[in-house]
Each structure stands twice: as C-alpha cells, then as structure tokens.
Length: 196
Ligand code: GLN
Image (tube, rainbow, N blue to C red):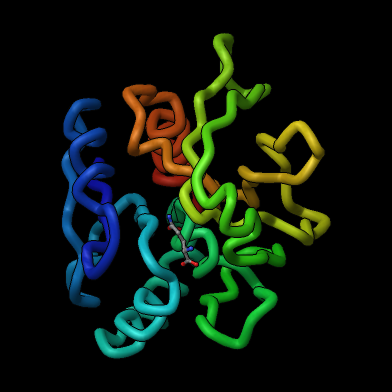
C-alpha cells in the first residue's frame, strides 16, 4: 500500500510521520506523475487559497479529481476539506468539487480561532477523539449520499464520508491518536480490492 500526501503547502510532514509510524509507505506529491500507482491521497491543512492556486499551477486539479472518480481514497483535513467541497461560501479558493458538501471557511471567528474538542465517533471505540481545530472550516451542507462521522456538541458536522472520500475540519495528524489515519488506510485497502 502506498499513500500520497500532497506536499505543495501546509502540514504534510505531520501526515507522513503518522503514516510511517503505522508502517505505511508514503509519497510526497508535487507533480501529477507522482500520483501514479497510489492507493490513496491526503490533502493536508494549510491555507486553502494558496493550495488552490498552487494546485492550478502544478496542474494537479484534474489528476486528483480523476483519482477520486476512480474510487481511490482521498482524505482532506482542514484546508484540504475546503478544497474537496462542492461549494464554499466565498469565491476564493476554487474547490475541486469532489464531495457533495458545502463548507464555510474560518467558521469560528477570531476569538476561537483555535480550540480543542473531544468528539464521539461511532466508527471508533472509546475513548472520544481529541480533535484540534485551527482556523477551522465547518460543513454547512451535507448531500444525500454523505455520512456524518462526527459533529460538534451544537450538531455541526466536522467529519464526513462519501464512499471513498473523507474530510475532517480538524487535524488528526497533530495528535498521537492514529485512529483516523487507520480508518483512512482501511478504507483505502477496501477500495484497492474494489473496482478501479
Ligand atoms: N483557515 C484556513 C483556510 O481557510 C484553513 C486552516 C487550516 O488548514 N488549519 O484555508
């Protein structure tokens, strides 16, 4: 199994460190050719407007969309989630429109730019997942085929899945809890044996 991590901007190194802790080979992706032969892709957190521009410059939009359409597992965290949305509340960045969700950037205002929250995630056994939110987006529309994995105490979804596609508003790569990465890898393994 080989997992790509988009490495043009943001906290890609932390994802790679967790993947290597889990014994998984990873590939830093900066060029379209580096997507070939991968079983899954992580789009990390960072700054989505920059990510959006760089993905256009590096001609990565189309091949990443192809990967998602060919049932490869793709996971976006924070800015990566913004990029995977169908629509966002602003004109910039331009999302990849991979998932049937609507997203609002910087949804928590200045006073609570960053916060931490324990989340109950039904797919995981206890304890709750300690989630770190940094200038985080929130999901404001969830399409029919989209499953909510975690929500804030006020009911706003912050982790959702649509088949082979996964997004989280928060940063599992900044914790020592590997359960989200393991969940992503299990999904990638299932998709690898499914249709191409
Ligand atoms: N606020 C950032 C954006 O809008 C996302 C922050 C993050 O990825 N931690 O792109």
